Amino acid sequence: MNDEAQLIERSLKGDSQAFGELVYRYQDRLYSAVVHIIRCRTEAEDVVQEAFVQAYVKLQTFKFNSQFYTWLYRIAVNVSISHRRRKKVELSVEQNRDATGDEPLDAFTSPSEPLEQAERKQKLERALALLTEEHRTIIVLRHLEEFSYEEIAGILAISVGTVRSRLHRARAQLLTHLRKLMPDEAFEFEP
Image (cartoon, rainbow, N blue to C red):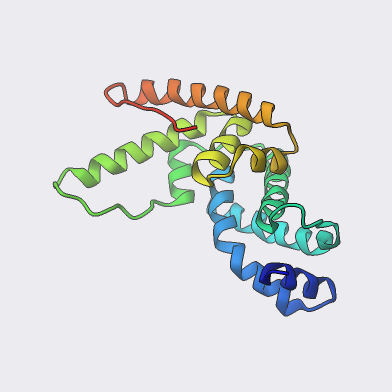
């Protein structure tokens, strides 16, 4: 039995420190993923907190036939979707940038590179914001979280074939938006 499984077993027996260790292990990664789905840091904090509460309450339903993070991520996606349905307010691109903040830029070689990177990032965020929630979620799962098709199917409770078709449509939609926003750039997705 691995360390994670032992923490889950201890949590099921009422050891709150063991569940706290699971939270500590996954809170940053889960938060980062939820920010991309929700597009608001404050709301993402609420969603992640609610996801951990639901995970604790439903922990006895975890069957050890998937990774714990995959199971937890599925809960977070469902909480995110419920949260978005309740809220039903679309943020403008500027509000989105203010809400999610800017990530630090990589080291650069020319004085214009940081500005160019910031502009590309802003345009990518704008293109992602134009996607439907379903398409944005599948892009985040595959390209930002790097889940396999099988893992995505498990998280979203859909077939692998549906994952492939949704991902294909989402990529096409994203490429259309990116080409309009950045006509001089070349884009391609890895499967």
